Length: 403
Image 1 (cartoon, rainbow, N blue to C red):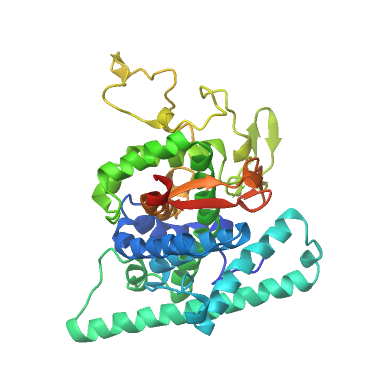
Image 2: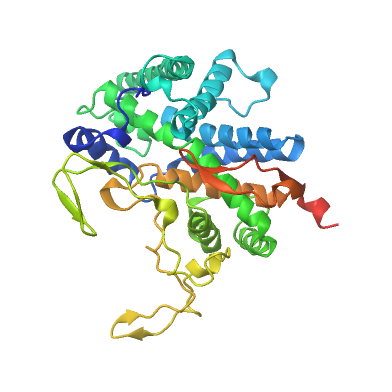
């Protein structure tokens, strides 16, 4: 498989996995690692809302806009720069257009291979393979430009101030780590970038779909946003810490429509017996996350963010030192779409933050509804969750909707 910037972390195993994953875990899995970028990402979310408020976009254009938002947001993290994906077409540089088109096409071609639309690429360089190769080359070329720019900035700071970086900026932190080669830094940042574009965009759309289908829950979320932030303030780390309903909405959206079809692939080091089946060492194993049982949830087909809330007034009493859950209250580990522990998703905190930001910024200014043609949208899976056809959202300015 072709990759951007070397073998991706997702497909590495054993020592090769640990060599790349260990330095990434120390920086990326820490709660709060994403909050350093909130200020810049607020600006990206503002640009998204401006587009949704002022342009008449069809369903396909909306989906592409959410992809560009996710790409621009994670690009701030990976490349220390705005990529320009949300700029008006007339103002985008040729390089920005090439990167934007290559990023979008990269995932479209991957989907073709996963869904079986392309099979021959496994045996020879057919059209799908050649086009995918082109997207990899473009993304590699532009990634190198951003990384070399960051290296130059670091070198200038060191010359001017004897600079020794140990701050929260991820790219500077990785580039300042003498134990990492350039190719490893590039692989880590590209893995974070690629994992944080299409998946984040799709799951943002799923959340907006669930909120549009459940206007009372959307209203509850708007009330929380209005209470904590008002309708104009940027999202801050402190404000986000006080937005439990926002977090419950996303967790419930993940539960109702799972983000991915399969877990990450693991290669067994030893013969293993699972449910009476002997699986030999060397076998690649993944489990179906979208087929998780629902019998552990009350009213499982309904969108009920309240099932994830923990409030002082509704907590059940402690018995023998353990709090007893209410019947409708779900265990916090009953749904873990990003995995758990050392092998959990590297981009979890960034993906969640970008979705929170977009939802908050959109709801501050707009009400969300769905065109009747999209009311019965069904979801399936390619690489990530995928609607059976693009969803046509309707975004109505709040001052107009309240007249």
